[in-house]
Image (tube, rainbow, N blue to C red; front, side, top):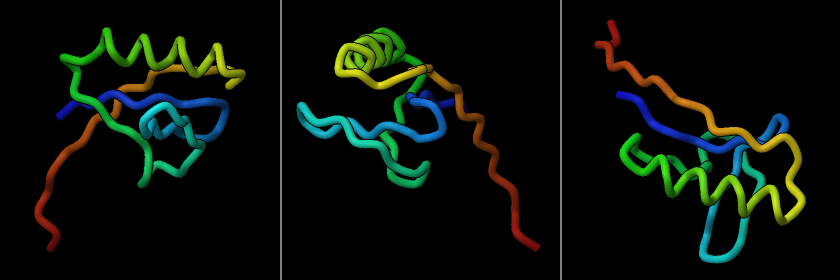
Length: 67
């Protein structure tokens, strides 16, 4: 499964209402691939609010049995 996430420098971003928070991966906002246009807009908003080096990353998740 592929998901999208937004990163600023070495932290991930969480979008909560109009607020943008710097968080760890476990608290970051995650989006399905079909919302790429929305993610690009959120990236633009974060850049405008002063977050540096804002990028979109693709998370690739796999599921395996734990033996």
